[in-house]
Image (cartoon, rainbow, N blue to C red; front, side, top):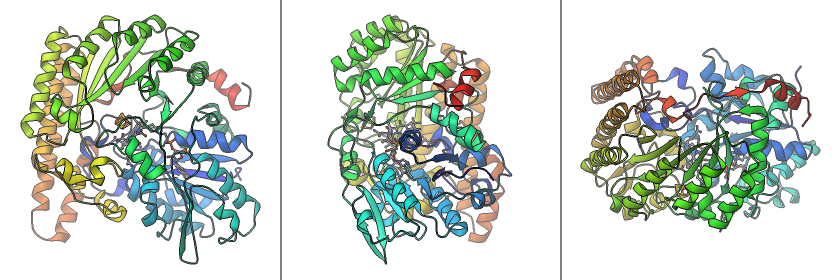
Amino acid sequence: MKKQPDLILLHAPSVYDFRKKSIMFGPMSDLVPSSPIFEMYPIGFLTILNYLEKRGISARIVNLAYRMFNDNDFDVEAFIKKLNPVAFGIDLHWLVHCQGATEIAKIVKKYHPQTPVIFGGFSSSYFYKELIDFEQVDFIIRGDSAEEPLYRLLSLLKNSSAVDYGCDDLKRIPNLVWKNAGIVHANNIECISSDLEDIDFDYRVMFKDVLKYLDLRSVVPFCDWFRYPITTIPVVRGCNNNCANCGGSKYAFALFGNRARPAFRKPSRLVEEIKVIGKYIDSPVFLLGDLNSNGRDYVEDFFNCAGALDKNMQIFFEFFEPPGKWFFDRASEIFNNVCYEISPDSHDEKVRTKMGKTYTNLQLTESIEYALLKGAKRFDMYFMTGLPLQTKDSIMETVKFCEQLYERFKWDKRFMPFISPMAPFLDPGSRIFENPSKFGYRLLFKSLKSHIEAVTKPSWKYILNYESDYISKDDLVWATYEAALGLNRLKGKSGSISGNVMKDNEERILKAVSIMNEIDSIMSSGAKSEIENMLMGLKDKTYKYSMSTVCEKKELEFPLSKRNFKWLEIIKASFGSK
Ligand code: B12
Ligand code: SF4
C-alpha cells in the first residue's frame, strides 16, 4: 500500500461530473490557462504543502479536476475510497467550484464518514455561515493566511485519537470555523500574515511528493502544463486597489479576511524563488500582482536583486495601472525577454472609472508604445464585457479603439488585445456584489446554494449571476462573441496570429454562437423532461466549443519556445538534494 499522508488536498472540477453533463461554459475560462472545468488549483496548495511539511505534517495534492479531464475513465469514487489520510482539505477558493467542491466532499464522506473535511479559500471564507451547515463540511479555515491555522488543526487531529469537538483546543485555533452538537463556532480571523516571511513558494516540495506518492498526474497544475510549463510567483497577498468587480480587492479582503493592508513579499525572496524555478524548469515566470503598487522604491529594490537572474529568462509583469517610462527602462536593462499585461476593462474612460480605475487612454497608449519601443516581447491588454455603464455599442467601440491603437503602433504584432465576459460570476465580496444597484446590476443569485444550482445550467448565459441595466443578457452574449470576432481579425491583420489560427478562431466563435442559439431554442421549447434529453444531445458540441472560444489558448503564451524540464535536477530535488 502506498504511503498515506496526514492531509490530502483535493481540487475539484467546477462541476461534478462535467463528463456526464452538457454545459456550454463558453468563454468563461478563455483568458486563463485552465479549461472550462477550472482545473488549476490555488497557488496556496503549494504554500500549505511547504508550511506543513517543514513542520512535520505530510500533505499531498490531488488535482481531481485534472485527473478527470485527462482520463475519461478515471473513477473518482474508487480513487477517493482508497485514500486514508488524517483529514481531507478541499478548496472552495473560486466560487465557480461551488458545486464541484461540495459534491466531492459528499463522496469523501460517503467512503470516509469519520475523516474530517476541511474547506478553505476565498469563497469558503465569504460563505462560511452557509457552508458550515453542509453535512459534508466539518471545518472551514477563513481568510488568506490558512497555513498556520491548518497546521494547528492538523497537529490536533493527528495527535488525538478522538477529537472532542467541544474542546478548548479548537477554540484556540485562529480563523477556524467548526461545529459541535449543531452549534457553529466561528473563531476570529486573527492569523493574517503581514509580510509572508514564513510562506514559501518552493516548487521542490511538489517534486518530492511526486516521488513519495508515485503520482505525477495528481499535481499537474493545468491540462496543457507539460507542453507549456508556466510558473507563477505571487508578489503580494491582498491588494491596494478597489476594482468594483474584484473579490480580491482591498474592500473584499477586509470583508472576508479581516485584512487591512496587503502583504508584499520581499524582493529578494521573489528573486530567490525565480532562481530556484530556473534551476529546474526553463519556463516563463509570471509575477502575480503589480510591483508598482508598492511604490517605486520597492520596484527598484526588485530590479536591483533581479540583476542576479539570467538576463534571458522569460518573465511576465502585470500592471494595475500604466507605469512610468522609468519602469520599462529598468526592465529592459535587466531582462531581454519581457512580456507585460494590463486590464483597462473598457476603452471608455467613464466605464473604467466606474470600475475603480482612473487612468486615461493617453496614459495607457503612451505606456504601451514606450514598452514596445524598449523591446517588450509582447504587451497584452485585457478588456471585459458586462461592465457597469457598458452598452452593446460601447463593447463594439472597444474593438474600434483597438484598431486605432494598432494603427498608432503600426500594426505591431507584439500588441495583443483580448476580450472576455465578466463571467461566470460577479465576485462575492466585491463592491458590485455587495451593492449591485449602485452599479446598475441586479444580482440573480446571492447565496452559496443558488450559485451551486446555477453552475449546472445549460449555458454561460444562464449561469451568469447578474443582469445589467445597460445591456440585456442576450446582447451581452452576442456582443462578446462579435467583439471577439473583431479582435481576432485585427490580430490576424497584424500578424500576431497566423491566417490559419484566425480562420480557426472565427469558425469556432461562429459555431459557439450557433450552439448558444440551439440551447436557447431548446430552453424555450416544450416539456421539461424533453429539454434535458435534447440538451444531452448537444453534449459533445458544448464541451468542444467551450474550449478556447474567443481566442486560442496558445495566444496567451510567451512568444518563445524555450520550455525545458531539467530532469536530472528535478530527480535530484525529488530525492531531497538542493
Ligand atoms: C493570481 C490570481 C489568479 C491566477 C491563479 C493562480 C493560482 N493558481 O492560484 C489565475 C490568473 C490563473 C487566476 C484565475 C482565475 N481567477 Co483569479 N485571482 C488571482 C489573484 C489576483 C491573486 C490570488 C492570490 O494571490 N492568491 C493568494 C492567496 C490569498 O490565495 P492562495 O494562496 O491561493 O490560497 C490561500 C487561501 O485562499 C487558502 N486556501 C486556498 N485553498 C484552500 C484549501 C484549503 C483546504 C484550505 C484550508 C485553505 C485554502 O489558503 C491559502 C494559503 O493561505 C486574485 C485577486 C486577489 N487580489 O487576491 C484573483 C481571484 C482569486 N481570482 C478570481 C477569479 C474569479 C478567477 C477565475 C475564476 C477567473 C476566470 N473566470 O477565469 C480563474 C480561476 C482559475 C482556475 N481555478 O482554473 C477571483 C475569485 C472570486 C471568487 N471568490 O470566486 C479573485 C478574487 C479576483 C478576480 N476576479 O480575479 N487567478
Ligand atoms: S482586479 Fe483590481 S482590486 Fe482586484 S487584484 Fe487586480 S488590481 Fe487588485
